[in-house]
Image (cartoon, rainbow over all chains, first blue to last red; front, top):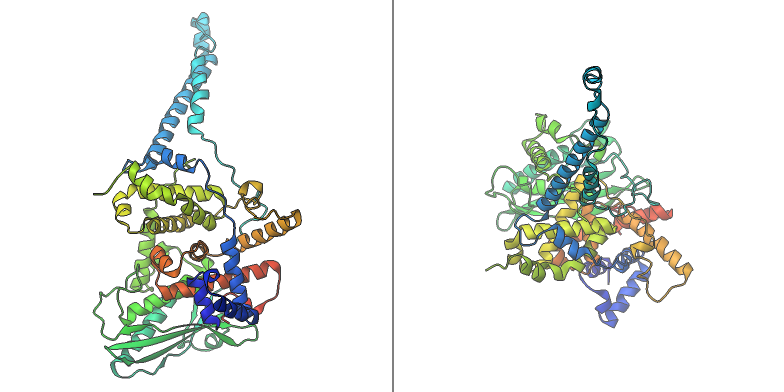
Length: 342
Length: 184
């Protein structure tokens, strides 16, 4: 068994249910490979993490908050309750204000009242029912919140993400393709660079940059190699990600070798929601960048710009501006925050 | 013909409530948020009865909704409050074989460390590790998350390494090879 077998087993199988010989091989490899042993430990610890039992009242709470037969669910009901409660509270508050104003004569009218009708002062506290109604109505609105630990209360606060400048160097393209595949690889590389640069949370050192930027230290290094033509009019772009080590060298972290179509018939603008809908060089580049950014090269949040600014920035590519527009649209269509339903 | 209303809820959602809650708790690591997440998921299910009825695997559909709600909610809140792992969280009570107080203390410390490191992962990584910890294989996770198999493998690998690195940071162990992202 090698590291890849162990990784496959951890991702896809129940090791405990495997046979004795396989289990022995597995244990033997773990004894000799600290990295796999660490991964295995993580895997088993996560699987063994005890979870609390299903709260007994959750089902009834869900039924109360979401009237199941209704099409629109519980939000409107709960918001309706809140509105009714708010009206009751406002009415009660208005009644209390009225009582208060009747007990204390208005300053502007005071001299006239004193002169003309001193006996007509309002009776004290004429509406005790209103005060009772406040006391009754309040619990309907102010449902008890479950105790929640705040940052101040919690003994272990969720650590804030470490803000770090993400710098990645893109090495010159190694295009080993020929003919039309050569052009496709070139297109892929240009689009790849553009898409990387469009991310403002990432500092990209491109191969065409002059000194000293070209030799500045980078946290990661990307190497792109192109091959082709492959059968069925395809080409291959191999993207290697290398990680800076403590001794200054770079260590291979990931290799992705997607194949694309040299002359793919796709729409012009790359999709934002799927990686597989089109295999043209530009689409593949976009997919690769999204993949890298999603986990391996997460942009630095402190360097990310507001989508409004990105939308208006004409120096950005159409795709990144369209992405900003979509982001803005998503923000505006986010559902309103309703009170917690307990 | 799709069955709607209470029947549909009882038939397609209620049986999976415990699983949904477990996954939600693994994602959020606190009970109130997990309850909210399950509740939101159920409301979404009620809002889309035809989709739920058409799903070949209702659990996978529900988990997908739960995952999306979790990521959306995390984006909105930008942070996820934690609850102290006191007696009420149920962690200690679930430890089997009646460990002694020292073992309990050690175990609770270990759980806290793991929890703290886990919460440093991004939402996507948490989702993958939680689903895998719940025993879902790659094919199921692929259906739930809509992410391709190879990408899933890479992300799972990456998530484990990140978690290991965070744990190392916390325990103060100097382990340069366990740096997030380094490959063996």
